[in-house]
Length: 321
Image (cartoon, rainbow, N blue to C red; front, side, top):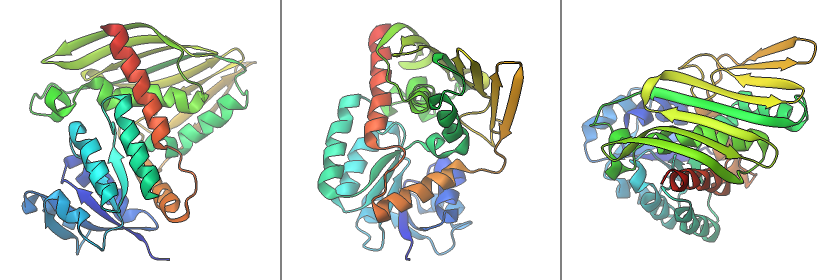
């Protein structure tokens, strides 16, 4: 079976170090082209993808008849625009998170996806990692009894004002960059949606949210989270039930921040630790995307799921005022 032929819109550092190699390594995928205003930026991609076609500009990739799908790692404020253009050009689309800056902005993308019959999705790799799949299985099967509380933390330090994460005009901020993980991770594992934001506190610098604390109510459990791009690196996601506890010690950047580990504590002081060495969730994400694009099989992170996470971010922003 012929592979899905991929092009990349933009030569970002993340695309060069993570997603580009994943597109090249994934089964059923072939990284064939990249579009950039500066061809010299493509040199780092050619190092692992020899023969890569370098187009001057993003539109040229969409006009390439030998490209089936595109990956979009552009600044956040450009995601909806280029996703719609790619779908119009007849390409499947995997766009970096957040695909949109407000939940309502997902609607035209969902409509374009449905009208085209193509696959469009947000690059939300954690739901493809066996750590999260296992946590979801345990929580929803009752392994820790009734889930009563979830708490999440994700932080790292970045005060570089030239970085797009610190530029409001580019859609920067902690909630857009990493809030999607603490909110979406809880939603994916629990299978529940937030009913209300009980309290939200946000600190901003230069128009960008740099620190957020939030508490919320879900149908069966309470929720608390903190995200920051001004604190020392930390990641943790905990699901606390009446009969047990599940702790993910490196839920969002396994293999970079630390190794992926699921710790299950249950009655009788029983502790089970599961580890997932050598798993690349970016590769798994690409392989799942290619399978869905080719066969129409359900995709773990459809646009409707991503819209739900953005709705929770919108609720948090509204509650903080």
